[in-house]
Image (cartoon, rainbow, N blue to C red; front, side):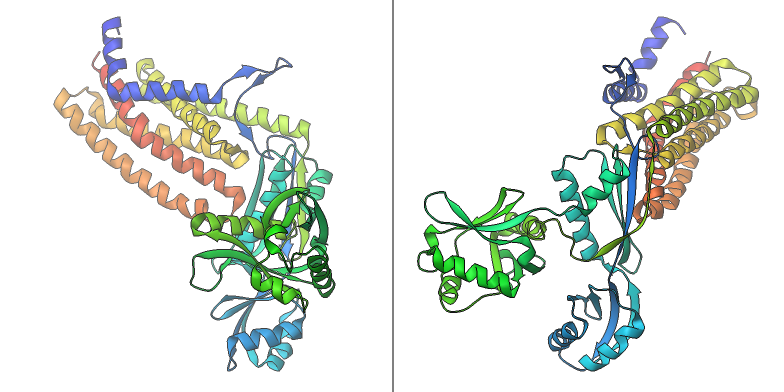
Length: 486
């Protein structure tokens, strides 16, 4: 092609979009040399490609289907005494019992409380699994740990039995310390000026409820929590001693997590009056109204737990990758990608025996991978071995579709007229769109299910198909038309 033809091709909107995206992708990846003189990028690597650890935790609880002729509230209250643990209503017909019991052990306890078991599953409800995820993420983020992922493993029945924590760049001892470390939580009371005195510590909080509206149906959000008998006595004594019961407006209660204030408010007039004469175990911390109040209530729930999970867990499995092994996997993954492109190039050349066809195919295919890498770098998606497998799969499916376009255009080895070319290109793109839709539908279950090791593969495959159909295939159609016209 002469310079005029190249300029016309580069200014075509389909080709121009492809070129712009490739340039932006290179900027997002940002290849550069670090302080040690090693080539570095903005790409984030998961446990497979760098040093790190993973821990899989198993919930020590169960979700039990039930029937009862008693009022549900009374049945739950009676069962709570029988099992000596928190019992949460997961939905209209299922209870979550936050203590490990076998079905055989629970059946007589249910019968005593006036109910019957209809189903039994080890694990927790989906809402509790999400609460555990929030607590762990908050704990990990507060410690400044980078490249950490917390994945809830919940089945189709919305019962989760495991949660997996992955921390790249963290050894196994650090990982266990982070997941198992409790935060220091305390409640203090304002005395004079900005001075405060300790009231109770986090170990005196026996249970924390999920955020709720009080009174029910109002727009006022908050979190209920329960103090132990000892904690309630200390709370009452401090409130009387420092004058919070007679002058609550000038004696704020402050909640601190690791010496950082996470909540501050005065006692309500009603609570101040009751504390004059009795211990109060059940408390409710109001956080405000609307969406902001709801979000603050969610955050406060985590802080009240002081980093403690709402249900006991045990380590069901763990593992990690050493730094040398991670570097080896990274080198092998890069080599696999390069070999895939080279092998595809040889196969395409053997089929067409025409460099002017092979070169655009390989360049377009490589640009597709580059755009995906740029997107991965931009959203800071962690690359692991399944993600690399997805990129290799994109190379294969991409070449398949480019072959379809080329074969449709070169029907019987002849270059068609412009009008016939457009008809054949349209037909080829129609076939490709149908095939792409099939791939997306096939990959969606893997992308949406809690199979953390396969999500990367499914997501990259879907993104690769979409980038191909929307961007690279139309651009290739224009490039190959210009090439074949010669």
